[in-house]
Image (cartoon, rainbow, N blue to C red; front, side):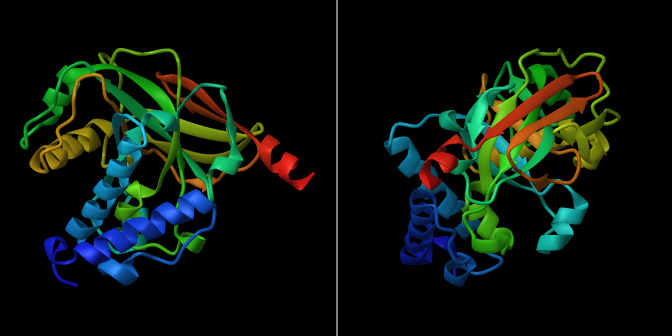
Length: 273
């Protein structure tokens, strides 16, 4: 495949394939068939087309998310750099707020630290001290990752094009100031209906969630889309992702608090009846 600017037809075809999958609730074949397996610029161009469509439909950007922060997941996809996606207003849920599983195709969950910015981070040389100074507060979070690609048969260009496999986010409701928090050393436990399903730590996220946010700030500034005050930044998984299912997923993050994602199947049961 050639560069993104020479492949306008392929980029639009890839975005349309992903859009149709989400609209129809039917997972699609990989978009790397259209844009190749390694052209990340092309993949981000597809992502931008998808976000532009959602904005035209009335949605609003509220933040960003970082993916592929785990070395094990990076190795799985054959890439050794994180990626990022965009958070929209209709993706955000609060602690304990019911979430209908019918809105997803192949949902999985992971626990994370969410940063809420108090000032812009607009430099392509942003470092961790600037991230710490710019952070208004942090929250425990659960990310619902989802793929429009059938069977999660994805490579790096598939997940980037698919908005970094975004689904939804669930935010805790008790903010914590970042001063005094050991984000690299914090432990995480994720339970489903009271049974542990994932454990991890802040160090699993590029060494520290703060390092991950600094990486994101540099990347999006270079691409002309800097982080702005008020935005939410999901900094990346603290432990292995697990398949979502009905019931409550409860994440505990040491020193930061707790958050619960309550998945329901009301719509699915109604359709079956």
